[in-house]
Length: 463
Figure 1 (cartoon, one colour):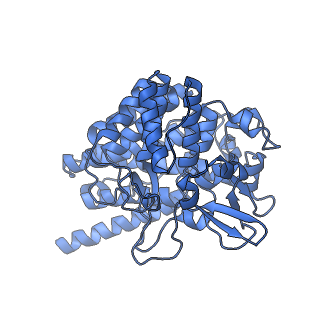
Figure 2: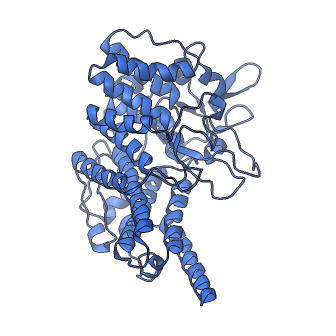
Figure 3: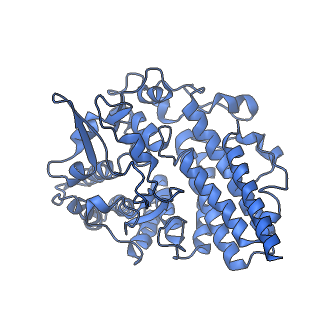
């Protein structure tokens, strides 16, 4: 009987893997209509092992495609080029060059990948949540943990889609008929749904990660994202409260050694993605690091290079360089391992403590708590070898916080681009740098294929 159940579990896991591969290749999330015998079926949710396998494959898909991918078409590289962090050196007329030049069209493959991968991943998460809701075989404690993680992932992916595309559909079902005719919701509606999912996730999850590697979201992970959501919405007091909860827990500490911040054991990591196979490190390192000149794809822009103050250790430790004897090019060097290291040394960090200090600093500044804001800001500056900020007016303190975010969080999943947009600086900063810049570029276009498939969707202005 045990042997039979083992074989059954292995077959179910194999189906899940095949399903996730299929999902990743879908033309559109509206085309997802699966037979009940696969991920949406009850067999997956008869055991914790198979339910965990379904969730693990969701993380795998996040790592390999879409917004969190460290590959060339992921957000770190794509939005680094879209903003002022990176300079493009790759092939002309490539999709990434359109991001750099701000000549993106609704037919751009990177845009389609971001949209379709994300909604396929949301579908898989919804299938998990619906299966858990119907399950009577999985003990409630394990079921709640899986549910909490699923709710977090659904909110997380929608958060990025909202900030990339503007008003979007918030998908919370696997019902094919409903999903094929969805309409775009307002930003406030989507944020309300994100917040609801995160609050429920936070109430369900515990402080325990389950493993020492922090590769599965916990209560602190949901709290950290909630702090960012409130910051983006201008809910300053709530942003401060959520960030403080993360900061004040004993789970996370700032790593003093800048060369250790992006190692998988870093105490400042709140959530990171496992690389799937022991010995492999991040896709980000492969995307950004180069050893010959000129750069094959991208390099650090002059604007970002000049943003570092004299004596900022992050410039020394988090930037690599290549020279031909006449000219020097720089690349992001937060992740340093390209080769297989036998045992993985670096995982892709998605959320880390440093951002929470900067969220709290900004939230405090908007509430006129200048002492508290400066304390948080200077903590990050001092670790980088810099003296306390000289900012002495409310406006200058906010500018100093934005400057610190720029040099602390560069090439981390589009943080710079989202900051420019939410603080209404995108026009003023990017217009002189990007000949193709238009104010309507604050949103990416809805993929043309989606508009053809669903007449209830409409295109963003300017496209």
